[in-house]
Image (cartoon, rainbow, N blue to C red; front, side, top):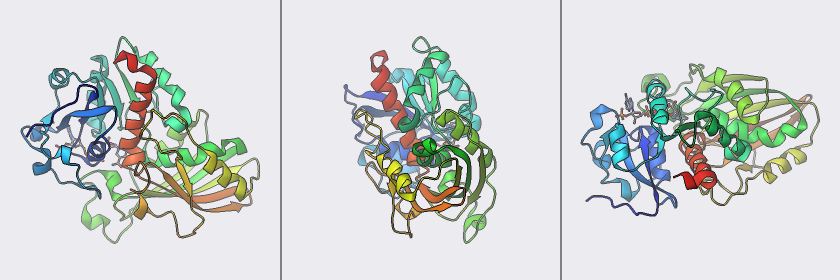
Length: 346
Ligand SMILES: NC(=O)c1ccc[n+]([C@@H]2O[C@H](COP(=O)([O-])OP(=O)(O)OC[C@H]3O[C@@H](n4cnc5c(N)ncnc54)[C@H](OP(=O)(O)O)[C@@H]3O)[C@@H](O)[C@H]2O)c1
């Protein structure tokens, strides 16, 4: 049975829909009020495959019914134009994205990318709406509205760190030290070999540590010195991060928790954003990656706990869902932001 598309929604494509971030997109786009998933692509080997029959579903929530009969295709611009698609969610490996994303932009498509390759380009917005929604205007530097554009969301570990740090900038942050405990799903599928991962910890994630400081600084809007150590742990979903902050002022624990609790972004048209992006746990046993898919919308809330003051600042632990807030959910929220600001161009 073919899926029928309602005419009042905006048709969108997910490139890399068979991968683990691609699957998170498919989950988030089920019953989306604005977007309708009209095209799912995988690599060339996926031609003539059917989503439910031919992929391994990796997420801990059930595959939505609407996906079951959807056909997969391999990527082609002709397919996008046949389906009247302008908005493209990209969950492709970095080397593939590096080639395809500029081509899509130059052909007039609006690309919401998860790949690391364009994030630091000066004319590419790197957005977490609660922090820097106004940087969406950078799409003008790429030639929009005459041309297409690429908008990026941050590295998954950065997304949680930036949201926890942004409300605390007013205390005069001098330095951030972070140790990450990153889940296996962060490496995609098949990702890390089971013999390396099970019952083990791998103390190096290639390229990861260098991204943290530069992406955090771009999102916050000024340079913040960061020292990061990134480690892969045998957890399926959710990145945990231990964070130490050195700062000029000496806020009390109460001041810091109040700043987190009051942090929000008021734009009801961004349906994928939770009312409050941060939850503080008084219970010292939390946050835990076990609750990575909790919340409404699921996986979009960054959980924080274990706040303690130190002689030169404070420290805490956070947990972010790397696939939802750190990837697909961040990207869908950015596309909602684009539609709310520039919807007349669609
Ligand atoms: N995993 C995370 O937590 C996370 C977080 C933030 C950002 N990201 C970024 O998101 C992107 C996707 O990551 P992932 O973890 O979902 O990876 P993944 O599980 O390996 O999925 C990769 C996807 O790309 C497709 N693909 C591979 N080679 C292709 C080609 N030559 N042409 C067209 N499609 C191709 C795959 O299709 P087949 O199934 O047919 O091979 C699959 O759908 C990466 O750039 C990654 O850095 C990931």
